[in-house]
Every structure is written in structure tokens, then in C-alpha cells.
Length: 71
Image (cartoon, rainbow, N blue to C red):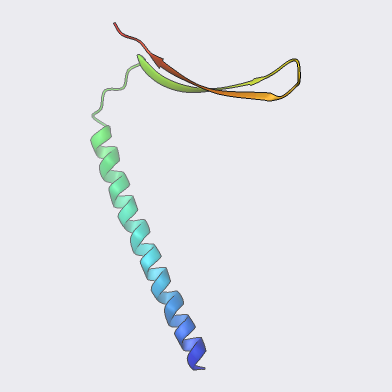
């Protein structure tokens, strides 16, 4: 009986800690999103994934392309 109460209390404490951490992460995410909203995003800088199938061995080729243009 005592072990079940301790386990239940530990689970409740862990649930509260996890909920508080998620709540704080949500606040941080909203704050970062609000600050980045005023950031000017242009097409001069882009990061694009590229997926292609190699015709010789039929395996997938994964690449990541970073494009930077100076005007």
C-alpha cells in the first residue's frame, strides 16, 4: 500500500514537472517566433533538401543545398 502511494506520488510529481517544462518551452518558442517575425527573409539565402534516385544502382541520393547570392 505504501509502495503504491509512493509510486503514485512520484508519477504525479513527474507529470507536473513535464507539464511545466512543456509550458516553459512553449513560452520560449512563442518569444523566439515573435522576435523572428520581424526578420527580413529574402530569396538570396535558402536551404533546400534534394532527393534523387541514382539510375545506375537505384539507390536514393540525399543532398542539402545552401544557396547564397550577393547582389
